[in-house]
Amino acid sequence: MKVISDWLSRHPLLPASLAARTSLLLIVGFAVLEIVGLTIETLDRLAFDDRLASHQAVTHAIMAYRTVAEASPEDRADEVRDLQLPTGFRVRLADRPDADMTFEVSAPDFRRLLFIPGGFPDGPPGGPAGFQSGPGGPHRPDDAFRGPGGPMGGGGPSMDFPSADMPDGKGGAPGLNTPRFPIRGPQCDPRMDGHHPPFLLSRWHPQRVVTLPDRHTRRRGMALLLPGDTRWLVIRYRLPVPTPFSSPAFPIAFGLMTAGGCILIIWGMRRMIAPVGTLAAAAEAFAPDASSPQLPQNGPTEIARAAAAFNAMAVRIRRYILERTHLLTAIGHDLRTPITRLKLRAEFIEDDEMREKFLKDLNELSAMVESTLAFGRDSSAREAVTPLDLTALLATVVDDVGESRPDDADRIILAGDPPPVIIRGRPLALKRAFMNLVNNAIIYGGSATVTLSKPEDGYVTVLIEDEGPGLPPADLERMFEPFVRAEESRNRETGGTGLGLSITRTIIRGQGGDVMLYNRKPQGLAVRVTLVA
Image (cartoon, rainbow, N blue to C red; front, side):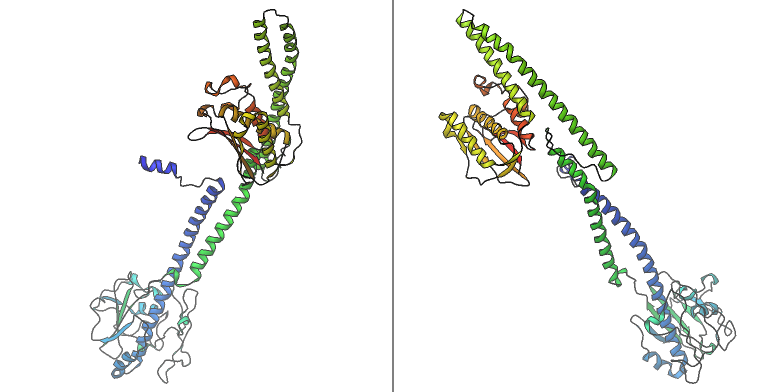
């Protein structure tokens, strides 16, 4: 179980995005409802097909009987041989019914089988004597035929036919009036196979009828004692198994419904979830300056409320950053005057060693104040955003740092020959940010390799790598905090005030980008700067 749990934690079954999860849930629900609906429709279709097949089978059986019964007794064997029957039908003359045909059918049941409610034409209602019960088996009135739904039909409605004689029809004996009546009702239409239901005059109805007792199988059969004869006409057949795929419209309809439903669900979910993606993109591109546009507060109520809350949060964040920047700038500005007075007074200290110590501390304090003021100025982001060539800017940074550090110029490299990359940004602020990063790489890592990648997915990436000892993983993010310096392995004697990376991150994030540190293998530190292309 633990192995399965671990595998599921690494390979979740559900998709990651909200739109995909919601679409999957709706598609599964739609598929379940569609399957249930189609199952109900299929069961109804199967029942209809079963009733139709049963009716047609009974019609073929009675037509076969009528053809044989209308012939003279000596010609009946030839008529049986000449019968043209559907596949699966077997008709033969026999001296007795088959052994498994044990259920005897009464005259009223047989009339129901032939859809004759009042009786046979030219004969008394109930038929001749003797067609009530017989040795074939006990008669059960509660098992009476209901149209083709009796022992030989499998279920179906009774259909009424008039008992009056009709004009001569096709298929009857010469000189006899053989009426033909179309079946009424929507359940079955035997005209589909090109014939009408048979109709028997009383002189040709069987003396006895026995059938198979089991009505729940596909095997059906009956034996009819021919009129004026001692022989039985034994008819056996098997009902075809109904299938919902007999019509090509069924799988086509299922496929079209499924495809249409899936397309509609996915399209609808993408439209509904699109504002959430816009909100996430706005949060990722949020900059503390006022250049970031506000989200439109339209669409559904929940989306409009979320956009309004995001805009209000952005205003509060900008106000907080502005107040903090003003506070730092004011403190730094106010500290300049007392620091200057202390420097002047330190000049009057007669002890040279003590005076040097005082001046060193005051210079360090002055550098911290200047860094604080620079941090405040960079955070205020007063410089205008303009199009600039990032490739040219990086080349300038590499040249300027190399000129200021001639001993390290050979170890400051702009890798490759990158093509011009045009972005929108603040040139002076970006130049200062990259100069901070390159200087840090030279000071702490001994080298600086600058690599500019091609724009991808709307962003351009700049890597600044060194060959230094790197940083502990816990300090990689902490180094961006104000006044935080590296560990002892990073040579504190040459370190600054701890504001360089803070200023750099403020500049980069203020233009919609980001900056992060990570250790290289086997050694060294890398800075990844991402800017909006």
